[in-house]
Length: 437
Image 1 (cartoon, rainbow, N blue to C red):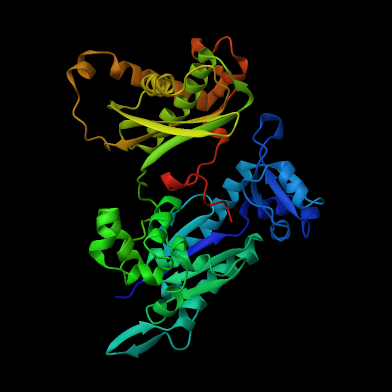
Image 2 (spheres, one colour; image 1 turned 90 degrees about the horizontal axis):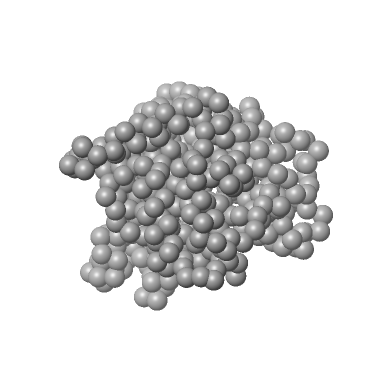
């Protein structure tokens, strides 16, 4: 049976919530920004009015003010964003229990078997070449129903893409912004999709896009008609996926709302108020980041990780990313030591470090064999200690229990990276590509 998949994308989400919290901001160009004093003063979200002046996500505060002198800079209120995200999902749950999140402001919904919940509609089906398909008008009606319900009850707008698979539904939600519904149906997808830029296809990041364009493939249609062997010789198995997506062959199901999400990586990063110039300070910062990563790993129940990644940005805004395979672990201490080793191997003094990031990947989902060292060593004891620390912090606050390593660094003792960062799924090659709108 032909599926009905809707991708919903909340428009300018952070900025929209800020306007609900403070109606005086309505109609004004606003930018939701990080803390300027902590050198996190970049644009995280902006209103439509600010966009018209060319303000972009990732701009510094001064860049945004230069482009739009009347822009209003608003600090973040992540708890409010999370609460509104939950309210939106509660609305979606009236229509289906197949709800798969793609960050705080995006979801896929499969409403194929939920259409009886919607009000009666005229012609739902059309016969083509002996097969029955949903009409474009009916699919648009479904998207509009959900979109208008969210807007009417919560005051935030959403763009909906309606299609027969997740990839094209995601593509459709980007076509009419803000507050619009786009249909990419089985009947029209070749006409709608073929002329779109190849970088609009899900998971085609900068590096992949550059390779495709070097091959003369600039649109999704050209990718769809490309020679299989040629694409697979350049991209390997990923090439098969790209071709399948471009040709409308994505069959990935929308997960149930209660299904455990599978993560490819878990990480956190921080930008620091002052450049870091000492190895001791680097080590302390990496321990703080690793604690947040290890705690997230335990929460998500992905098991142990076998790869540690380190991201470093210096005062000149130059970045490096390195990684290493390690013994399967979920321990902060081990993750931090591997990250620190990577730093020492790849960054030589003198240095001035502006930002650091630690990420783990290669999860075993609990399937790794326990080694002799883990059975008879301290691994299980250390894991139990770290879980106990998680519980104490959850009950009494992050700064109530700290490692001795941080005793001489009050700033890092209060740096609760885990609970002050809201993470959105992103392509590894495309860190920060997609913002909240």
